[in-house]
Image (cartoon, rainbow, N blue to C red):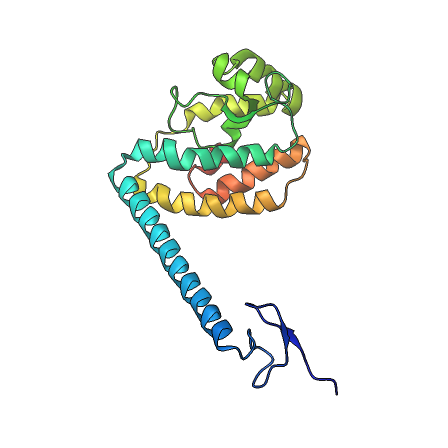
Length: 221
């Protein structure tokens, strides 16, 4: 059988391994020393990387610790919920203008008007940045878009979300919701597809129930 030959990772010359086919270098002392130094430097770099990661995680935890409940909701949880809404509406135009462009998760009933339903997925649909930010949400066009795409009954359901009894989520509860929401978001990112209006409503129903925030009559259409 023909001897196995390898290329030395340092001098790049071909050699025949004597002890194991996994040998990385030839028998030259200088090559063995140089390769050992490469491994040492890699280990150092990995330790530094791990230390930086741990430092970032610690700073993140400290930041969360000093956040108010509402600050955590707006800065940490809300962006994930908004992205879930956008992923449900993947491939759809702005609900208000029917234009494509930079996407937001636009609230039908604004966050400022009602904190209770700001993370209810039936209250969040894909909306262009311009429509959502520059035109104060385009309320009337948003309403017209919902009516056109989903129908009058669904619009009435969305209007009725305002009747949900006030809820006061604490940060500890929202952290658990956030972790669950991140798992849901990951699944949707891996399964991006264009869905029918009926499918988009059903997915909002399903995820609202999974998140477990709202009473069923206000989270399922």
